[in-house]
Image (cartoon, rainbow, N blue to C red):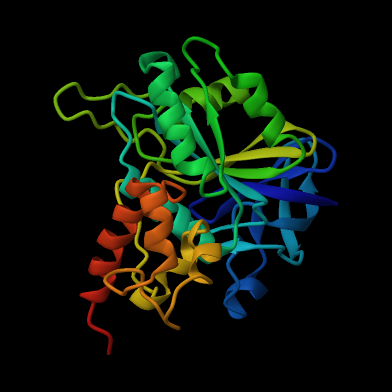
Length: 292
């Protein structure tokens, strides 16, 4: 029988079987010998040891279509990064880091802003244009007020999606809406520091529909992109790709060089100033890392 690993805890793997039953499984010793670690999201073949107790063994890990390092998960089709539109205010530099991280992993990304009822239409439009101008799909929703959730659910249909974002933005509440059976703990945002309590402690895959899975991951407060060489950073800002062709100099860093196509588009408002400022900040950070 085949199935998909939806959770792994303390050496046990919980596999959603093709028969719709959840099996508690152990991985065969051959995986440890070959230094292969089963991942949440893996499609596997299992042998059922006890049908009544829903216990089995993982016999084989089927070929992976993708593999993420952070979090360590397999076979993800897309990522939905969720931030709050307000309370807490979105940290766009952190969001940009996540977009770059997914670019490194070659995973398509959509951006969701929850708590949309807390900001004006003008503020929503500004946030939307900041990222649609870079080629990203942007959703506004409110789990609390039940706004925009049907459109969001359509985007998830038929795919395995990793749901990620900082703590306190409503990820667990959204998971409870998508999968009422998940019964996830929801955390309140600390009024003092406007950070959320960490309510998700491990990656877990939830079944939304027969062919639709959503993976909730622990909330992040930082995203590391240190493996990128500073001169290559612009490649992870999609809106710079066409503009780079208009640069006078080959290898333009889009910083102080004259006749720079990127800077020209920033001046024209085609590339958003906030995104360009984020690029400059991240470039400086990466440029200061010592390479050995």
